[in-house]
Image (cartoon, rainbow, N blue to C red):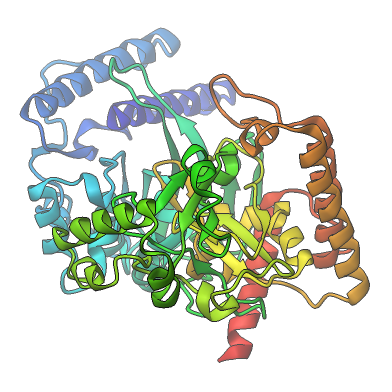
Length: 550
């Protein structure tokens, strides 16, 4: 379909030029400049190849008729049928594209398509073999890439050192998160982005059509250097850029890899504690109420994960070490639950879980809690809770605050003993802009990580006065959450959802927007026009920060 539409559009341009020449009184003999033998294709399905050849002949006839209708003297017979380029049936990843369409350095070739969208976990055996054949000697972590990345690599190889250009409709995932660091350094060694359509929802009329979020990315050889590079936004606006980064904004080709430690001076963000217990160290509110008189508060702790916090669930856990277990092991509930954890871990496939059966009263992985606070209850310090997965339909991730007696589960991240102004930065629009660009996704939801998002987030120097101003605005947001009631899921709604959007609480939205204005001014006194401008500045700040660190 891409090939056929392109043929018809080029034929229409040819007709328009001829009409304009006639209007100018320029006498010219009609010589076809757009012919079917200039069109090539690769398609894996036999039937689709046959349909393409037939459709190109039909398209030629339709445009010949239109040519004669609009310019009487210009006649171009359809019969006899001529060769329709070279429509090859085969696996595009195992064919040599230069043999299908050989080209010299100065030949103009335009390569484009709409390759399959498959994440690493959705690829079948043959597709994984395709990835291995293409990338094994090139990339070390290619198994984590989307299938579509193969076409970008083959396209970049095809155009390198020539005037040829390529572009693909792609899932936007290859311009987000870890995939950027895995794929784009190799692509940028051979090519540069000369135009890009930023993320937009795309669907078609197919019966089993599933709308996807896509980008369109154009590559050219590094030697070409197109003067006018353009970025097209989802709202139809376009912006000229000297360079386009793999995150599809006007910026140098900065790539943000996973980083072990914060580059911004933030306290460490760590994954919460993982029980690996078959659910036996976790108690519902009802079960906890039954044993509150028997089990002290330093053992029966409130337990919070991402869903608990966002949806307002109340759960508890048994938080014990050797000493507290020996003291309370005869409590029937503890005796029963620990016995079940032992059985669960003994039969686990994981060697780490089986090893943990020697201490079945403890969480298998205790996060950083013990080293941060020790074993006793501590209530005078705060912990920031960061959900590891949050819906893309929200304008903001609902980060939160709990006191340090609460145990954070491994479905969330935790920042222990955190300053309140830090929560304000994490809740800001500029931080959400960074997350959308460099963070990963779980399906379409945001996947928040310390290594990719938190540790790499660029932050300007801020005065004590600015931090105090942010803290006051955060306290206002926390007060509104409490005063308005309801869960965080209800308060933050789903205003960005395509179907059945639910508005964010009006008071809460206004408070967030006030916070956004203050945080934006900390980065740029005049504020920002849009998120693309925010991201461009963040990438430049990141590049400077990394350069200073090196």
